[in-house]
Image (tube, rainbow, N blue to C red; front, top):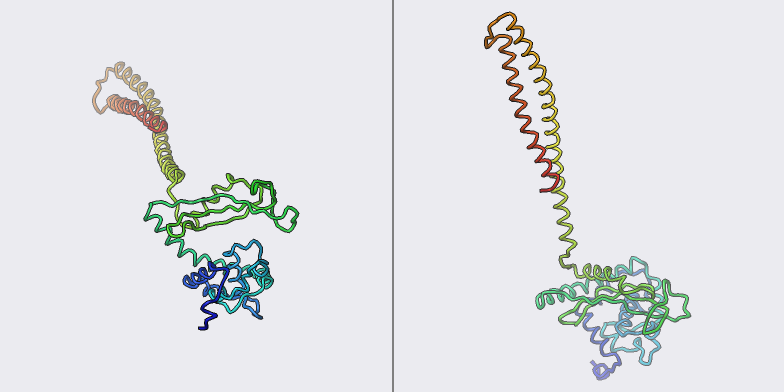
Length: 324
């Protein structure tokens, strides 16, 4: 290695460190393995994707600052070697690559980022739970203004940004407290500039929980379980009510039929008694009158049993209907 390589200066030291870190976690290797349809002339399209990541890490406001800032990143060989690339492309090449990406290719790149960051996120989530027993999320909407005269930004709107009314977006941003990194970003969703924080609270909570794969028990979960139990109890009670109502209706019908038979049997016994007195016939157990008296007794006992059963069923029905 030459002295010039050892003593090579950079104005972007953190980008060098992040490049070394990106190599350690496998980010660069994964991105370079994503198949992209664009041809490589001077720079591979995968190199331009990595350069776009570098622009984000450098907090460049515009993509053109890759080439036009006071210390252009695309001219910094130390950063290129840290990532490790032979050289960076001009910002215009990066812009063309991003513009012509297919949706499927963009999703593959996003999938790589998700795969790499999830390993880090899962480790930090477990550390946070081990240390404090809980996860702490931060969520808010942050203004992202654009030029007030711009007409090229879709769905932009006027809202409060930087203590002024500006045209732009409100970025719904959610992070989780991290024992090692301080915080890790979980979700960023753009909304029109007139979006209020209170309208996005639920969505940010759900986005954070989807990213970490964890969420606390909620009263709504307990309520749902209770509703299910109540529904089962109600169905059981309705089944019991139907059974009692059916039995009660059968007993009442039997009681009415027995009452009618009893009246008829009493008339028959009275007629036979008059006939036996008139003819001075003795009454024997198996005579017509004796059999009529026996049947009358059976009907009277049946009527008594049914008369006792009806109130019991009515009481059971009232208890089931009241839920007691």
